[in-house]
Image (cartoon, rainbow, N blue to C red; front, side, top):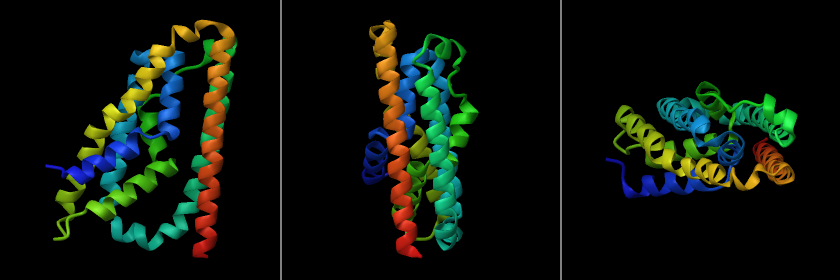
Length: 204
């Protein structure tokens, strides 16, 4: 069974604001909880699969992390900026009509370029891999814990968005909300990119 420290770590890292949660809140408002479920499941499964791969490949990843970290962060942050633009467009009647929620596969694949997911999962692999070197058991345990414990944490954001849906049916309110979500996501992308650049310069 996962220990209390791992569960606490997953709860804190999963429920705090980040790219996934901001997108889930916006999706809940714009599409409702039911249509956001594939996005939710995709995040949980994506984190679990990515964690499994990171834990199995820990030694290799740590050797090359300085090489792959910045390109991944740049790609991920550019994608976040594109998503923030899509959320902004969803604030208009035409934009909302043409918008669609993120798919399960799309949400899973996004975790591979999500800087917060990499930081969270690499740290978990380092901190919670068994000291006896049993990588297989550790990888399965940590990955399953992220998929299971993380789901209700991110669910809260989609649920809150869904509950706000009726309140935000008025056109200008929806535009303001989507504008705030888009701006927050863009700021998050910029902050993450700046942090990664500073880390890269410190290592170089």
